[in-house]
Amino acid sequence: MNTVDIIKQPITNELEAFRELFVSSLKSDNPLLDNVLAYIKNRSGKMMRPILVMLVAKAYGIIDDSVRHVALSLELLHTASLVHDDVVDESSERRGQQSVNAVYNNKLSVLVGDYILATCLKHASLTKNIKLVELVSDLGQDLSLGEVIQLANLSNKEFSEEDYFNVIRRKTAALFAAAAECGAVAVGASEKEVECAASFGEMLGIAFQIKDDIFDYFEDENIGKPTGNDMVEGKLTLPAIYVLNKMNDEALNALALRIRGMNATKDEILSFVETVKKEGGIEYADKVMRDYRNKALDLLPEYIPQDIRLALTAYIDYVIDRKK
Image (cartoon, rainbow, N blue to C red; front, side, top):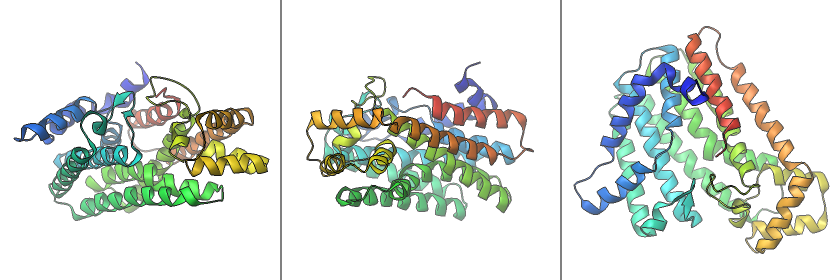
């Protein structure tokens, strides 16, 4: 049994029912809208966030309609945010496939993203649990704020790990934290269990984003973006921040600021990438990522069902060992 099978094993039937709900939620009588929604459905991924909702829910209770609707709400919010992010970042690809704005156009992408967001709110309301609605709403604010902070950082002349983690906690970790917390809340877990689930999700999400940032230093068509793509967009992530602070080299700092200001050439970016790799940036980021992996595992209660423990352990190992 491979890692993904171990993750899905405790919720095989529930995941199939969720996929049917996901597909049915993204339909429209309008031919153009339905066409775009069909494209989005066809490029949907492994449903890792809904899987996390359902695994945590099953750790503390029984998966019911409330769990399914909040899992769908979070997945739709995530989907809408990706559609909007690709417009903001002017991205033509996501995970090796053409982005929605590349296939259609920016105007239609924004409108479809808004439609998916409205559908997200509809399913949050179907849980009939105001706490879950609040969690989904709070997540939407966090995701947006993370993007705003990241844009503001483009003019920042400091290279701060604190600023980096402030962004990824909102842009990525908040989504995993909300998924785990919603799963616990939906089945009536205790306050301590809910808090523990949210912390587990946050540690998992931070590890997930660091892994994504490491990908930016290697060329791989499976990942769906060329080497240094984040830096083309002015983003300096953990490997670079570590090396910049370690070396404190005037010329390298000046180049980093040109990258952040989106004024660096392609050759300069590639040279910067090689310096970061040579000076141990990847090894440092990998160590930090594995530290967060261990923090997450320490948060798993001993008393939850063994198959759920195995699935959640496999989940985080999949996050840090994945190839794309």
